[in-house]
Length: 162
Image (cartoon, rainbow, N blue to C red; front, top):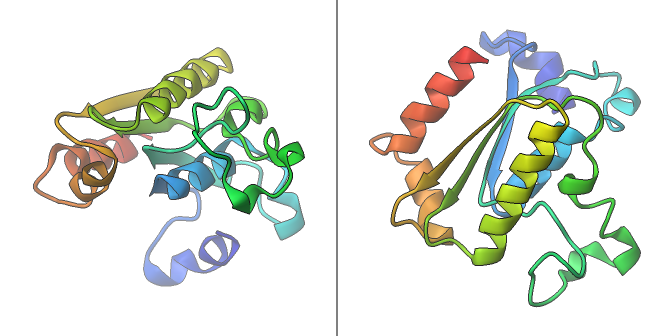
């Protein structure tokens, strides 16, 4: 993100309009970048570096109440669960979020998405959400990458507004 912010003008981009997004674990990391404000300073970036966040079927909560059947190894100790959970790390008013999940996605991810949406709204955030009809966890990713599908049109229009 720091490299992009510093070099985007060389590619006709706008450093004031950086959006982050991803699917599943990528959605988790994008959401964490959007809500945590403690990483920008060490990289000499403005606090509002992230203009908006577009997570798809993201993981927003780790720990006993996350709904995960097993704990991801990459988190290390359970002591890291709270710090790794975007749901518990909303620092101030978050950037706008465009949240997506599949109608047939994993139930715990649908629940986590709804909890995250509620928390973002409670923090004064601007949240839009779509459920991709007929999509499961994997097909939601494909649908979001298909320019002929609904997600691309809605996401592009959403970014134009933000």
